[in-house]
Length: 361
Image (cartoon, rainbow, N blue to C red; front, top):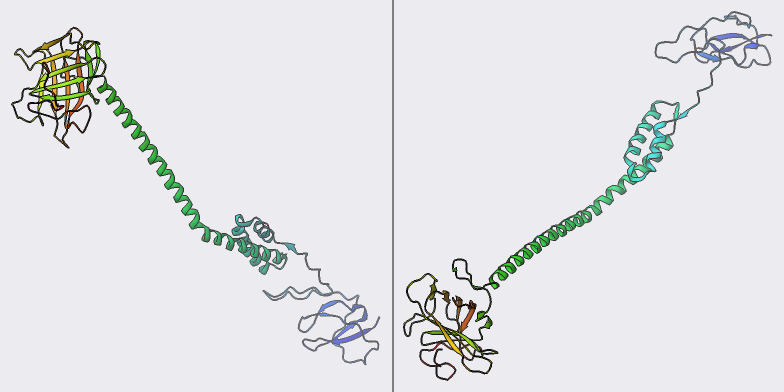
């Protein structure tokens, strides 16, 4: 072995080393810079003033500790350790995986991507910067797409929801209206049924005018009013078809006095004689078998309305104390002859159909 010398590139100190130290890292005796012993030249240079001899068998002295905060200096003759293997950042992997979930994971992907890039920038032992960047790009893409979707279609969705709500409210209103209409119809039907069931009843307090054309019973036979005549103070309710029958009611009005707005009521307990009621009937041969007269003991409610278009409406509830419990109840109308084939015109002395008034009518 032979010695050779080389210069420190930092301070220019001449260093003498043994050829066996070639390739080793040693600190400079002057400036402590870590140097790599170069390969000795082929010829030994001329001897000069020796300043430092380094022999292979000479004891190695540890270099002084580095300054605080500076990089650690390797010991004399030490070799650099291999750099540690880098590992992937978990946050970078999570960012990429979340971004692949679409709009559900776009926000976590963006957050994890930014955190991963910040940690990789501080810690050079981590890798995965590309994964974090890919997660950020995909995450931002889905985030922009989601915001755009809600921005363009939120109005349509809101309108559809409002329309569905209005339809539901309208359906509820219609159902309520139908229920009310059904209840009203049922109540009206019940009232009509109650009114149509008017029958022989002497108690006028509980009697009501039925909402129907006047009809009833005369000597246990069905009676339907087909003609109405008011003549000389007498109101005649007549049935002409089938068995001809009639109720003749004396109305207590003065000659020429109008019937409009008049009402009359007679109870069975009235002791004084009341307006006369006459029943007339014929058998099937057309002969008049008889008549029956009542002056008290009957129940009567009689009302007249207001004349309109030549017609005078009226309502009657009459129950007689005969054995067959004859009665007539409902609506009638006194009107012009031309207005209805079954109606007659109010008169003061003559039959409006052109004939003379028959006895008992």
